Length: 140
Image (cartoon, rainbow, N blue to C red; front, side, top):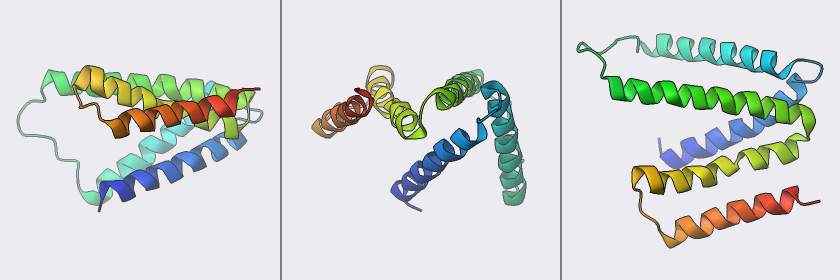
């Protein structure tokens, strides 16, 4: 399956996440809501890994570097979710979700700075449009 189709599917489900999350944090502590969401994700992911028969671990020991970056990614995800759910308690999903998607612009910049990815005109224009669109939405 094409990465583009997968990415659009991801965006669609992220959109649903904002709506369902907004409804889910009404009258519930945002940190508890994040914990419930995390448990559900763990259960779904474990079911998929089980269904696909992918519980096989590598025969050689895991290397420290990739595991460390996965742990750091998990920590970043946790902080992102905690802040996202709290923001949903304080503002409409139609504003919180687009601001959250500034993560795309941050990933573009970090991809260039940390991963050495190439800077292209498409990257620059796309990043500017994302930031400009977010600014338009959050201005009073």
